[in-house]
Amino acid sequence: MYQTSDIRKGLKVEIDGAPWTVTEFQFVKPGKGCAFTRTRLKNLISGSTLDRTYKTGETLAPADVEENEMQYLYNDGEAFHFMNNESFEQIEIPPTVLGKSSLLLVEEMVCRVLFFKGQPVDIVLPTFVELQITYCEPGARGNTAQGVSKPATLSTGAEIQVPLFVEQDSWVKVDTRDFSYVERVKR
Amino acid sequence: MSALDPYALRIRGRALAAARAWFNDHAYVDVPTPGRVRSGAMEPYLYPLSSGTMQLRTSPEFALKRVLASGMGRIYEIAPCWRDREHGPWHAEEFLMLEWYRAGASLEDIMEEFTSLVAHLCAALNLHPTSWRRRTVGQLLLEHAGVSLRDATAEDLSEHQESWDDAFHRCWVERIEPHLDGSLLVYDWPASQAALARTRHTTEGCVALRCEAYLFGHEVANAFDELTDRQILLERWNDHNALRVSGGEAPHPIDEALLDATGKLPRCAGIAVGFERLIAVLCGWDNLHRAQVSP
Image 1 (cartoon, chains in turn purple, green):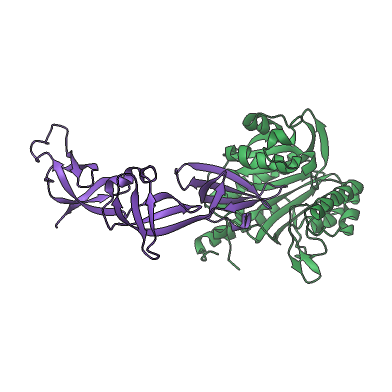
Image 2 (cartoon, chains in turn green, blue):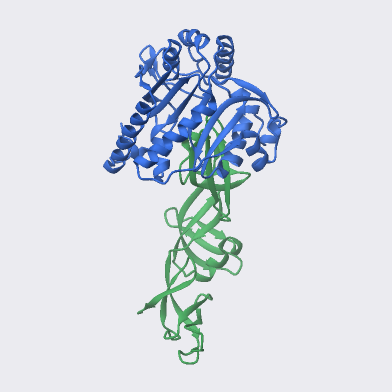
């Protein structure tokens, strides 16, 4: 168990069966009272935040979380298969855990997978990925009155917004955090 | 902990000089008292550091009260103090405590002097003066937590199973303190948290004649209408020690000289100000360590 004096940014704790990480903390001591540590926590799975106050002497349960680098292998239609690059162990991650991230996955991509009590619960893709555009309107035709961008479909299935000059079949660099276009790349 | 900040140290130096000038102008005598003492504290949640067979003071209060009882009427000290187990942006193990005591003064008188001193420091540091609002603990509890100080049970104040005082403090930290912006004088604390203050009966129940000054959410000063009853002080000391022992802590040594002095005190009031914290909050810094030289 962690003591209040162990509380640091990044400490991972289990509350009501879910893993949380400390994002902010402050030691507070009312004039004539015992000391407390005010914390702000982020849910490692949903990203939601929670404020909790711990009295000195109270304990926090460590969260059984582990983060591994895993390589994406293939999708069998039901689950996504990944391999641990160190142990070569293979696991399946259901689409519900991957969420939108699955739309940017390419084979052999190395991702960070978060495990809670041995189960994969979250995945973080490399920040940037280079993908080919499989479909978009030609530059001129997408040039509407307001438009400075146009939709483009990537080889992995994701649809992103690209500038008008970007043509079909070209390669682009995409920010996986918000699915935004970064730049064209030569392949 | 932090790199030396000559700018902040100049500000602290200027504030110290301005404070001493204010005390001179108000006929206070500077009375340095020892840092090593027989008993470092009497409150349950203060943790004095040991120094050989003695302790390091957590406040100069005990010694200054002996001086007051000897017949001096207006005394002050800017005293290095030590408190174990207090760490963070707004706490330091060693810090400067400014305390002053005045015979014949009421809590109101001493708070008036405090606001006058803060105005004087603001002028010396070219800062905007602050205008103080006042509230009682009962008003704040009702306003922000919807409970009455007189009637609230521990369960009304906290979802945890804990003593009334711990529940009160959790409620204070979680539900009241985040709303304390600007400059605020908070009066009439629960009688169980009177420490060295006298108590009185009000419509909010029996309360301690104590005032805490809050600046932008930080407690910067604590004042007492001083207890002058030897027996009550001894009872509180024993109660606090029982609480400490039940929590696995050593009891605080009872300061017999303070007990004797307390019985001889005139009606008086006194105040303790965390000096570096006050300066840091007034200057808008995000910690008090800027105003210190790290050990």
